[in-house]
Amino acid sequence: MTIITDPLFYLLAIPAVVSLGLSKGGFAGVGQMATPLVALAMPPLEAAAVMLPIMIVQDVNAVWVYRKEWNGRLLAYLIPGAVLGVALAGWLAAYVSDAAVRVFIGAFTIAFVLYYWFGARFIVPRARTPGVAGGLFWGALSGFTSTICQAGGPPYQVYAMSMGLPKMVFVSTTAIFFAAMNLMKLVPYVALGQFSIAGLGTSLILLPLALAMNQVGFWLVRTIPQALFYKIIMVVLLLISVALLHSGVLGLWQS
Image 1 (cartoon, one colour):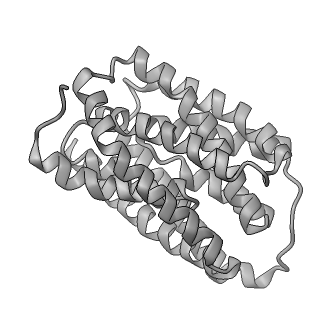
Image 2 (image 1 turned 120 degrees about the horizontal axis):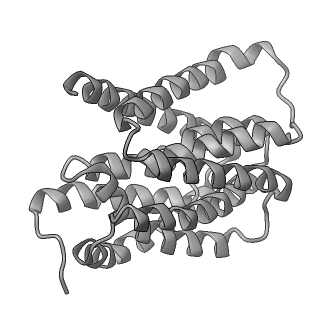
């Protein structure tokens, strides 16, 4: 089997795969650190292509585990938006700066987290009904940024978390949305020639670790209370967003 042999790649890929496993287990957002980590050892789109087969197998596992509780109306608006976002990203991938997308998503999500912590106290929390325009917009933004730089989590979470969903409904809806979107991304990645025999072989080698961490994520999500769960997600979102902003600014500075 042909695989990647660079030791630096595996030093970065192992924690990346652990984060993906926890993310697909229900800790939405944790996995966003995966591609930026691996991208330190190879071009970002190539790194994303190595991670994508692992993510798709994990998606199947997560959708099966969380198949009973999900919000169909939310998905009905988000998924068509994601189709538009993935298609646009595939078309513009050769022209759009990965660094600029990271700066935008990082800055926006930091603002969202700060609002959630400090601004939300001035309004009465309540469950909301998903809207067509909002679902299409945030789904498209998630699809676009996920395809360009694997940063689709914050746009999705900004919208989905504002709905006030119960914990398990949020987790289940998230699993189905990203499973659908990752399948969509196969088309532009194949068209851009990002898959390789060595990359796919490496994905296969890393898959058992990813699936093992899936099980850890499933257990943690069902064990941790809902209020603490959302606090953890917000802390993770902030850390990831700071990392995205930092890497994006460095990329723009060096370009």
